[in-house]
Amino acid sequence: MSCWIRLGIEPTTDETLIRSAYRARLPAHHPETDPEGFQALRMAYESALRLAREEEEEAGDEIDAAQANVVRAPQAFLDFCALLDDPARRFNHTAWQAFVRTLDELSLEVLDDLNWGLYHRLSGAGPLSYRCANLLAQRMAWDQQLLDLAFDDAQAVEGFLQRIKTPDPFDTDLMSAWSEPAQTESLWYARSLDFIFTQRPLHEFAEFASRHTCLPLPNDAAYLKRLLVQFTQAGMGAPTFLQCCAEQHDAAPDNVDWLYLLACQYSLLGHDDQAFPCWIRLWSEHRHPAAESRLLELCAKRQPTFLPLLIQAFDRLEDCAVWPDELGAECQVYGSPSQRPETLTRWLGVGRLKLDALAQSFVDWRMAGDELPLLAQLIGENHDSRLLRLYRHAWALHRGDSALLQQIVDEPLPVDALECLVLSGLKYQARQHLHWLAKAPVAQAMSAFTDSQTLSPQLPPALSEGALHKVCRLWLQRLRPYSDTALARIADAFELSAVKDGNDLSQLDVMLQLSRRATGLPPIGLGTAIWDWHAQTVFLLALLEQPERWLQLIDAQCLERLPFNPAHPLSRLQPL
Image (tube, rainbow, N blue to C red):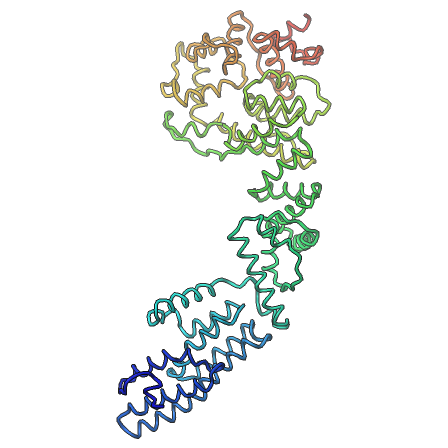
């Protein structure tokens, strides 16, 4: 058969046309499946090139070179096939590097002829190490030859090249001593886990991973850690995972990732006693985003009485370091103490639980503003004095003035981990509130307004309406003694005469009525006298404001237990 007929072209001296015809027919004559056809096509190609040469000597040289390459090109292809068929080298990066280096010894023409034969063998080889496959793809520069291919072929090649850019799930060199079935099945399983974890819902991952299998996994630390993360996030706990996490955490106790995985595995296996200190450490030392919700769950399960305290302790807003000089600036509002949106949602959630009287009254106060039942609990008797003190601190964040807030800051941290966590959060907020009361322009303006020695000081116009006016009312809700003159000013500026029961400043109106009867509140005092003053004051104001309801809420000995202060108006009621 003529070389031109076998190549499917007319006789020509255009070597580019000859090569194109040869490449077009090369995929149909694979060296392994059709060695005779491949050899015949190759000889036709070489003959056509020889006939195309004008000089006999150059043609003879070309025949010698072509014959040499006919021997070398198939040998390189066969070497590649042997590499893919050898389990000890198929997934070994070093072996692939050695093969790619042998390609550097071939001429450009031989490499050109070998190019797509290597691609077809690689793309149909089954499970591969993408790291290894990329070595060959980059050496042959297949991504730069896509424009030379037909559209469908170019799409297939581009898709393959994109696929092998995905990192291997683990170091495939570790499988060199395994059998071929173990290698391919383990790699398939690892890639399946990764795909389902990233592309499908977690419950599908858990279902797939829960199926019994017997496949080896490589001793790759990074891969095993990723597996633990995937299984943990899918809600799958196991003693083996727990042991692995514990060993890794013991080896690296300051590693936050292993501490988190250890805490998760403890929780998933129901080991709450071991999980609790891990979650506390994750919050206290690392502010881990998952620690808040986990600690609230554990607290609701183990110590629900502390749950409202923990919600309050987690209510941490970013502190405002510097306020603008302009009193009417809108950002003044954001510097005032308030609650995070998450905290409001948590109050709604905890409201569905069955809590004891103290905890429940605190939740009701934060949700609905009904403070009277909580006040009765705070000045009443409680068998747990530590718990009562923490709830008093939590109340003081919203109603106490600087002296009471400072007591929170000065409180020593307890030994109990949960109590320490709660008090740490309350201390943080107390420092924020003290900073606001001392430095915020709104608070300073209110202090100047109430303490002014002038006859008729005016409230700054910026504080007379809108959001800043509401901030001023928050400042006034903190219990503190005022002079008769200050109460009169507050009454005029904030319309205390229009106050009704349940209004946020109703107690100030009661203080105003007492002032008009020459019955003012004494100074607060120091030390234990600070809380005593607040207890006596809330008792007096509640009794005068809602007497029937207040007498039903308190126990018979409540007034007798209050410290006796002859200077306080409440002392006149004790004999009654």
